Length: 85
Image (cartoon, rainbow, N blue to C red):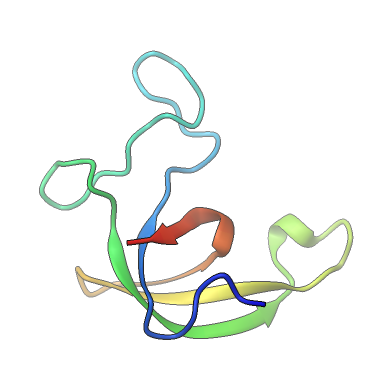
């Protein structure tokens, strides 16, 4: 069952290995275009089942989401990098 559906508003989460100035992993804020840590926000446009880099050892397919961000760019991400906006 997909975590998100087409049309859902989502926000990008920080990368798990990102570091803030304190050096603590996973705590670096995601910056938006205004220099705030509100996080990039967008809308889910496509859901596809693909083999991701994270699943290469087990060769399992995972759900990937195509996101149209509010700033006009597009990305494909897994559910572990997104949250409801």
